[in-house]
Image (tube, helix red, strand yellow):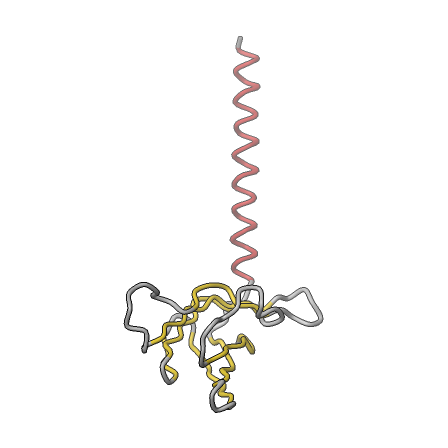
Length: 132
């Protein structure tokens, strides 16, 4: 009986130690990854055919004409020669007064594939440029 109890305790100790090691390595990896402070986006006005470049501070909302744009995350991939830039952005249209749609766009945007989850607005297009 005592032998079975010791085997169970040994398995639990191994499981807990492996769990703590995994958590430690996740924190170690996360602490070495550089958090970006700014997101640079390019906005096309489809009516005038003019482009504008905006630099957003992560976590702050910025107004551009009729849009309110907020960036929550921005990451550069470190593993490619041609790095992928991903950003989580929220875009509100100030002219839309109905409460049906809070955001025109709310989600991850990718620099290399803007059509994965397209930004669909009748006047503006948005592209991710860089994270810094």
